[in-house]
Length: 160
Ligand code: FES
Image (cartoon, rainbow, N blue to C red):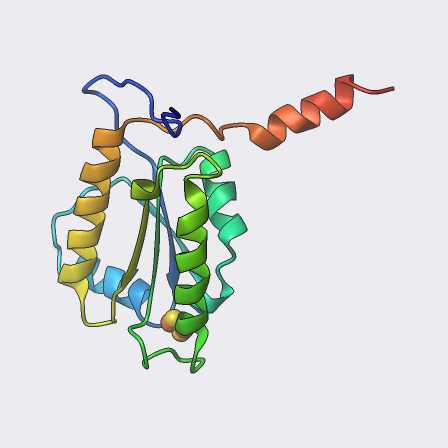
């Protein structure tokens, strides 16, 4: 049985979490959490995009490859997308992607998908804290680290 890349870890492990968020709702909600001085875990690095409809599942795989232990995808609530239906496309895409995660060796608990509006700073804080706690308990995810680097090294030193 696969361990989905979950490794044993000591108590000092602090997860690295990448958040792909839409600029109109979740980014503004995260900004509100900051300006409201809400205390939250500091493990999340935000990548801001125009809309969740722009988030390709390959971005998530790339984040894991570059060292993330967990990923958050968050955007406007249904019917609030500034590009009409981008979040509906995202929801469909990530429903399928979540089904594939076990197959590609990533524990689905490492991915959080949520809706956070510009006025929901408190909700953003809760998502950050819950995701950080969950991923911290899972431990580091190393199965995908340096996947591309390894391929580049193999290309450089491999077939001539
Ligand atoms: Fe926020 Fe589309 S603009 S999800």
